[in-house]
Every structure is written in structure tokens, then in C-alpha cells.
Length: 306
Ligand SMILES: NC(=O)c1ccc[n+]([C@@H]2O[C@H](COP(=O)([O-])OP(=O)(O)OC[C@H]3O[C@@H](n4cnc5c(N)ncnc54)[C@H](OP(=O)(O)O)[C@@H]3O)[C@@H](O)[C@H]2O)c1
Image 1 (cartoon, protein in one colour):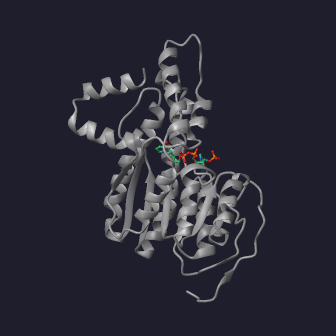
Image 2: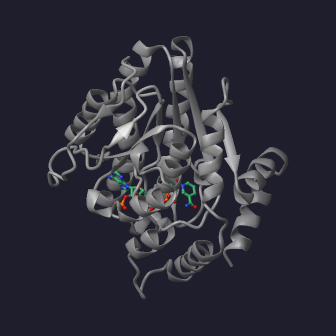
Image 3: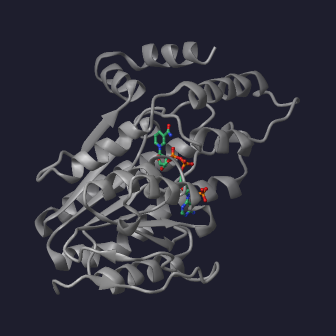
């Protein structure tokens, strides 16, 4: 790899159709490259900043590049704008995934780390969630993650090194009432990632699942906005309780920077574990599942939603 600084001049956004490098200036050609999905807000945005501060060239992808303003301001404030590249990637669009990975390779020649972060939480009671919404949830949180992983695997396999971090959730450990589609998608991520770890271990590719409890990101408001509510629903009172819980979590949950810091810490590990649970909810649930009979857990969850 050449020692001289690389200059890439394309500063434009070419619209919605293709992956487009928005702002590339000078960067260190020897810095490791991290590709992150869903960096317009929340964990993805904070992870982009944290990894860039740690010396990564960060490819910050998002499905709508016009939503990069908050990330760009944070990067400017931290004086690391030159370490960020913005590329359009919608995880549910196969062409967008392929084109984005090709563009990353053309610009950087390699991908050292993938953070499969993009996702959303669809709420509602099972009977009342439409099949279209069930499929939409799985398309983004599960099949989208599979598509991006499959696009990056040949690169890491040939490099004989790499790190893939998949964002699961406390909902990948236990199903909660009112969030079945979300839980199903995250349980799928858990099983997929276990298999992936077995398959990639002999190729030097490290595979990790991060399982956060509730953190204060926009996901809660987005999820609340998506729920269909009807005064005639037999689930109305239960759904109201779930909504109250979600609203409370959205306002009072801990600082999401904890998750970005954990991801940056895993990036420095030579031999990370498969699972990292963080946040009060996740840790309590793991201990509860180990120690308590299932009926007791049910009672605790029902009581929490009262
Ligand atoms: N916050 C929590 O309490 C919590 C707890 C456990 C796990 N998680 C997981 O953490 C991950 C990040 O969530 P967050 O809390 O940071 O929420 P967030 O702020 O809403 O971020 C989600 C990101 O995913 C993006 N996204 C959604 N659909 C996409 C698609 N089709 N293609 C590409 N990007 C897409 C969003 O883009 P737009 O801006 O365009 O919507 C956004 O950038 C998710 O996988 C979530 O399930 C969150």
C-alpha cells in the first residue's frame, strides 16, 4: 500500500440512487477501515465518532445521506471530519448494499470492521401487526444484516482478518409483550451470529454480538410513532402500558455513548467473546433466566408493565 496521502475529490451527493462518497479529504492509507450501517442517529452515529477518534477510517453509511448533518457536526467538533466517508446504504436494497461495498473497496482497498447496526423496533400486539409490517421488520433487522454481512464476508475471508459486530438487543434474549416482531428479528440475529462465528473462526474473522438493554436513542420515538392504536382494541390497556414503558425508556434510559465505547473496546480486542450484554435490563435478564423459573420471570415482566 502506498505511503503517500490519498486525495479523493468527489465532494458531491449524487442523489438517492447509488452509493455516493460525499466528503472525502486526506486520510491515512494505513488506518483500519470500519463500515457501519445506520449512522444517521443513535448508536451508529456515536460509534462512527468513537471509532474515528480511535484512528479508524470510518465509512458512515445511511439510507438517506441528507440525514448526515448531526454526525457531520459532531465530527467537525471533534476535528475528525477527514476520517469519515459518507456512503448511501439501505440494508433492504440489494443493489445499494453491493454498490456500497464496492465503493468502499474502490476507495479504501479493504474492510477491517463491519458494525451491523441499522434497525428499528416495531411495536404492537401480534394479532394487530399486519403481515406487511412483520416482513418490514425482518427485512431490515434480519435480512438486511444478512445481506450486508454476505457482501463483506468474501473481503474479510480473503484478507484473513476482520471483525463483525452485530447489534442484537435485550429483546434478542427474551420476548416482551408488545414487541414480538422486534424480538423475533433479534432472536434471528442471535442464531445467525452463532452460526457465523463457527463458520468464520478458521478464517481469522472475529464475530461478536452486542446486546444492549434500553438506551436513550431516537429508536423509542420512531417505534412509538409506528404503533397502530385503536380504542376498540382488546389489547388497548396492555398496549398503553407498553407505550408508557417505551416513552419512559426513551426519556430516562442511560447514555448511548456506553454502547459506542463498548464497540470501540471490542475493536481493540484480539480474541473477543461471542456475546457482550450491557445495560441494566440485559444483565438482570441474563441472571434472571439463569436462576429463576420461567413463571417468575413472566410475573416480573408483567409487573414491570403494570
Ligand atoms: N436504543 C436502544 O435502547 C437499543 C437497545 C438494544 C438494541 N438496539 C439496536 O441498536 C441498533 C441502533 O438503534 P438505535 O437505538 O441507535 O436507533 P436509531 O437512533 O433509530 O438508529 C437506527 C439507525 O438505523 C437506520 N436504519 C433503519 N432502517 C434502515 C435501513 N433500511 N437501511 C439503513 N439504515 C436503516 C436508521 O436510519 P434512519 O435515520 O433513516 O431511520 C438509523 O440510522 C438497532 O439495531 C437497534 O435494534 C437499540
